[in-house]
Image 1: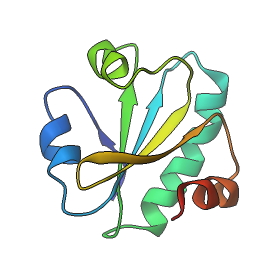
Image 2: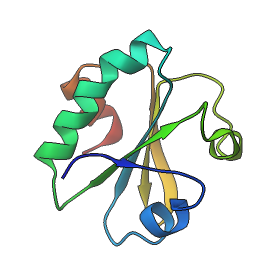
Image 3: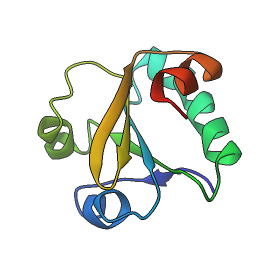
Image 4: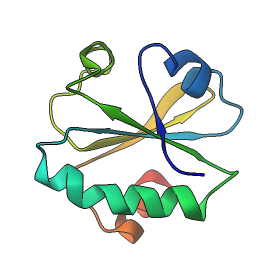
Length: 104
């Protein structure tokens, strides 16, 4: 399953009410490190299909969500469990470093 697009309209159903952990990538099209992290996030989505849901939030399109989580720098990846943010990683990281930092 590919990453899903997370918006303010589907955040509750896709993240807060998810029965499995959700990895959310806050990014923007103009952000170089975000574009570098994109394939890493896609690889995690493939590798953990059925175990972790992976979503992306474009902070330019979803300013309300970015503000809700106090996003000041991107890329920011947040791991949610039972609807609550439990871990996060700021900036580009190779896949192994990102998985280690998030504990997945």
